[in-house]
Length: 303
Image (cartoon, rainbow, N blue to C red; front, side, top):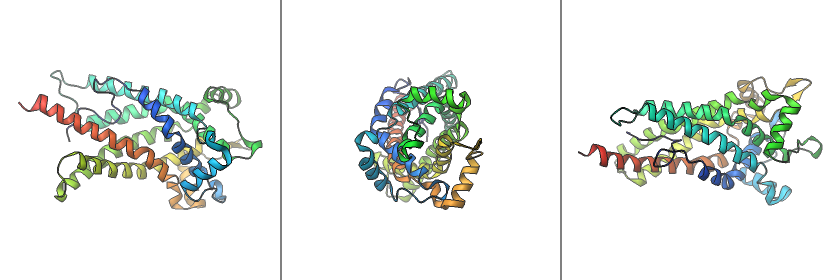
């Protein structure tokens, strides 16, 4: 599949588009909150608080009200402002520098590498907001005397620095960056493979229906591939110090303890809200890219 852009690219002029992402955060924030609560449910071999994602959503609404499902919105907006702006900026710069003198765009593998590099860099820059988001969305599940009680994202960042030190702002940055790399790689690889499979089946032609179905499959594969890394990130960023020692040593320790105490399939807690968030994004991304490919081929390769 030849492409002129990649997941993470900006608008049609190649410039970053942060405002729509921040606007979308208002709609996906409840999904983020439910996903995070699901991933923390049953931590340390405790009884699961929520049976399903729907049960989690209804329980949160009942206990915390409508405002409760928007807890951490300020952190979600800051995450988009930092992560997305950095990711799109890095992507645009690298894409332009690696474009040939005759205007030939980078090849597929190089675009994938650019996307993963931009995603990892953006994830590093956005980690402080991610830490605040995880903690703010997790607060409502704790007893009143154990809650951190951050008022907003800036209050959270200031208190984290004051109470735990600057390095805590980047707690979990390795799994956060790893998730960004996995998402970019899995989206690209699974979409290309799914599209080829559908075309080879003889039931699809290279049109929007095929792109939609391949994108849905890609979203499913990407969700499955990235969720174990995501749960490691969530738990590390939410953990407390116990007798001066952290609950988890690293991401691998999280995964081993989850499997040991909660079961192998607990690595995919919160699958439904995560897919509901990632699926539409994947579909829109690849349908947009396919249309851009057609325009590129018609304008520059047809002759």
